[in-house]
Image (cartoon, rainbow, N blue to C red; front, side, top):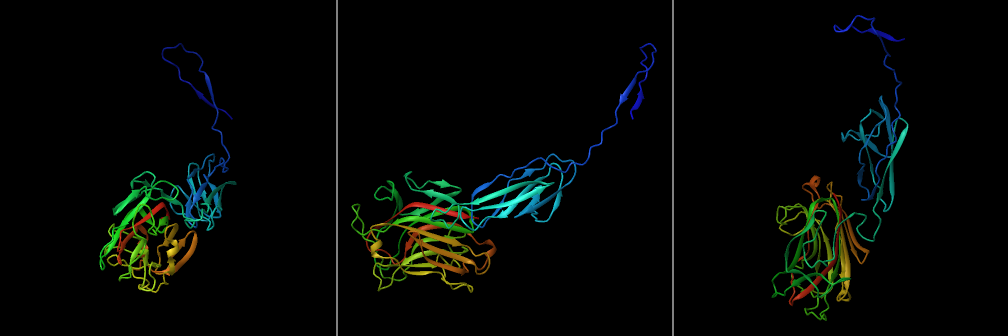
Length: 386
């Protein structure tokens, strides 16, 4: 049926019969709940066992509420953060994100399928490929010192203060430069030290640090003594340390995860490795003395006289405890796991804030070196997840 409206007459025109204007009634359309196709952007090189959230897609092409369902994960609507696996409804213009936990294996895909009004889209994340180190964590920082300086920054990670550390052309592993740590030799009873601090730039719940290290045999052309630790107490000669700020590792620190070189009177120049954890007390970790956690690794020998004069690849993995006793340490030498500790209570007072945001390489040799000794580090890599 057509509606009829009669136009009025203009006062300036002669009277003529009114024109009839035909106005169709508005059309009525059926509900359309089938959206246009949508695609989630895949993510690659994600961390193992991590919570992965997609970029949002926008629902289009519908004029009524459509049902949304999900399999293999969860979704949220309009960035609410209320991720759910239950069915719901969306309307035109809504945004949708998918979320899932990535695989615990390297180079493995995880899929979440979101279906809206019968149209499906798949969100896929693929974990980082195994490269022989990193324990599946993404690589954040890499430095071979070929720049000639300690100014490298990457992903918010940067070098901090240092003591007796320079970039040197005297020794390297695969390039022309490395970082030289000079232990200058001190009288008996005095500490010695060479240390490079690193600001991680954020708090990481898991960290893996790998580096090449050269311990001299005393025959090097650039001089310096063979690596020999004095048999003095305390036998606390640090190799790596990780902790949660403040920046200083004094009494206010939250934790310490570190291993150290030490020797007893019957070991001579053989180094013993201690993976330590616990409350930071003036720079000294408490090895297993806090909480009811497990025991950190003690590896003997970790470094022997046959390791002097050659480059050795070390790796150190640490997971902060998020409850009272679930911290982990794993220690690698030349790609082989040589020690591990689980159920550790490294941050017993505030596990909800547990993590690592500072570290240093080498550090104080509390038993000291009698003669000037040069230790080199090259090809430093830092992996981690928040």
